[in-house]
Length: 375
Ligand SMILES: *Cc1c(COP(=O)(O)O)cnc(C)c1O
Image (cartoon, rainbow, N blue to C red):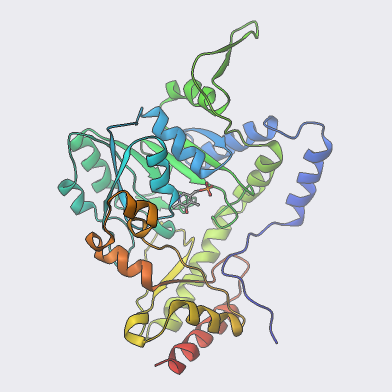
């Protein structure tokens, strides 16, 4: 019996483990020189003209971005109806209101051409998600933002290593938020980063990141704003530094695995495959839609059948307006038909850099076998 293939798995090499050991033995393990080096390396990777600050999660990056935009009660933020719950939760936690837009069935990205229909006087920002690492149309996004005078907070949690028009995601734009959770393209165990273009924002980011504390030239401490505790440890930053060196290799491998999936699943009429994405897609996930309703099957049973044959799968994501909290707040999932359908039919197939082409073959033959036995 072959071992179970997970749907995601971080690639951490011996060199990283050795470097982490050195940091652990160095006497300084929380934010310090490794964080500074990681922030420099991130800025360089993104093209060299960005201010990047490391944080303890992608969620923290989104929350900090909302604070920088002074978004709070009475404000509205436009976002896709399909994302990780976090994207909308942070807006609620800021006291503002998420305003959902449906997503495209194939790209899973928000329909930018519907944004105009939901803009109001209270709209303060748009929060696109580059789903699975496929960038939204950046030209259309930023012309909308300019037209309506609203901020852009990019949820680029899936999109480290993605690009648009020859520039990296996070190398341009307003406020760009990354996550380094173990399921993302690079990891720091838990962690994230905020990339901004304006150097004047940095002192405020640093204060909000650490208790609102600022120091004068003599080192005396003052507190000027209500900051939080969002800093990254040096142990995590050290992992991130080593991960970043391999990011392009990881992305190339992910893209090759995705090509294998398209080759082997292209003829399977029971599936809706994701957008192929050309250049610039970093392939954080490979998600297919399976019409469980039409097949008279349940997603849960399907996933159990896959698991019984050694293949783990995931669900990314149920639609946000369908969650109980959002129903209670008056949102209706039926207003977002594509998101509702994706939420019910999506299955995430295994995709991570250490997978082999033979693993993809195995996933596809098990998938086709399971689908055939259930229809
Ligand atoms: C992972 C993720 C986040 C949150 O990142 P954390 O580092 O886990 O806080 C936000 N948005 C999306 C789309 C994500 O996938």
